Length: 284
Image (cartoon, rainbow, N blue to C red; front, side):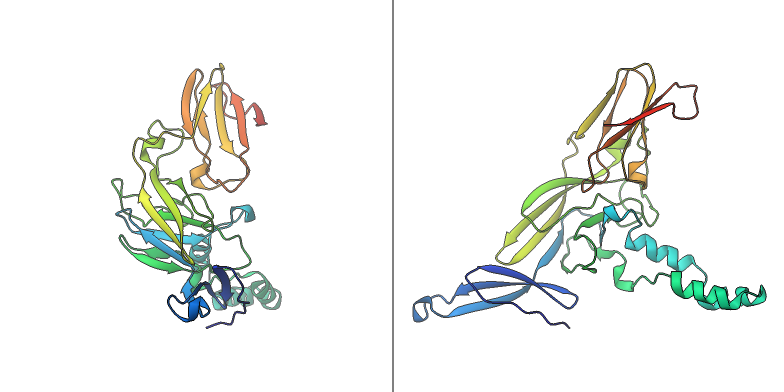
């Protein structure tokens, strides 16, 4: 399974990585025995996810700073690529067999099966282990495709919340895009808003997902008091949830950061309604 090493000190809780698994231990004196001089070491799986949303969820590790697709999108893209045998056959027919085979071996990215999204059924509580130690330990979630009032079926890299840490106690809101473009008036009400609660229980970290109240206001409101059409987006985010927000002159619109782990830099461009391209732009 894996091997981990640790030293037993005075700390009440410790964490360690054993192979592919995230574990934790709780150290406490044995009650009522030898005046507490006997210590009990309890090993547990460190992270536990609980789904109280009422909808099935999908969870995956995601590093937004990498600028790439999530593991689910990578796996979907790899499934649509031709196999090495097909590519080699086409290369042989075109007389480029040797060079093409080298390119295939060098560039093909294999996404392990356990790097795709982990399902979390409604009402389920399940352990979570980070698939990769080389990426940021950030989690993102989305409702499983085809659920909810809209029955939204997202693409592999659509419908996800922003990536967030789960190693410190606290609670916060995340939202999942449900197919309504940000420039439309019903964008904010259409989002699936989730309340994420992180709690330390002995050595375990319990992460609970619940529906946030529908009355939760957007964190940012953009007031466009110019005579131009204003377009807003978060710098460095390219997925669907970060599609530009277009606000007409003398109008207001809700806005929220698509990736809370990235810099909160708002890019703005202004153009006249009759102009097709962006005329003026800035980052604030």
